[in-house]
Amino acid sequence: DTAVSQTPKYLVTQMGNDKSIKCEQNLGHDTMYWYKQDSKKFLKIMFSYNNKELIINETVPNRFSPKSPDKAHLNLHINSLELGDSAVYFCASSLKVGGDTEAFFGQGTRLTVV
Amino acid sequence: GNSVTQMEGPVTLSEEAFLTINCTYTATGYPSLFWYVQYPGEGLQLLLKATKADDKGSNKGFEATYRKETTSFHLEKGSVQVSDSAVYFCALSDRGYQKVTFGTGTKLQVIP
Image 1 (cartoon, chains in turn green, cyan):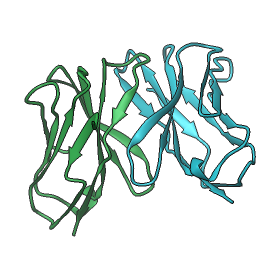
Image 2: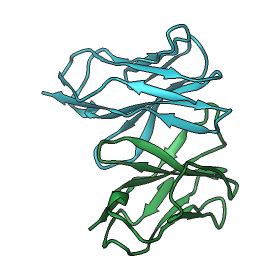
Image 3: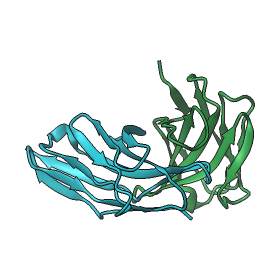
């Protein structure tokens, strides 16, 4: 049973296209996140949702729009893809926000924009 | 704001060598500290954590002690194995910021 699952695992697309990445967690957690990992493995938070409400938006371009239909799902839609969007995107969840709460990560979606 | 600084990698060690990966942090409050590990092709998973000063987190032979006076949380292991080859991330979580801040990651390669 996968705790945090995201699809697809790999995504290759052309510049200018629109794409979505889906994430689901079956842990009953209240908080979900999207992180971007670049080619040097640097990990940067993009968004955080708590009980379907956006609580963190880290100066991400408007082309990125997260959607949380319920607290078990957090999808990421990207419009007008650019070369610089190529990265690995990780979804994560935690029981609650902050403190000593462990984050559980999905396996990542490797996005390649050509 | 909060920040985490890790030693640059990659770190290459022979099997059974002693490992230290340095981590220091800057935070306004009293954060919780974590080490996460990322094996090739996988997401991050929690390795160990410490929630207050002088706490020691440990797991799978790895240890790290929360040192408030030096704002450090160095990762150590007495005898590494080839299977420990991965990228290690130091991180902190501060209630005030409601998020986890990660260091840049340190790649460890253990050779037989």
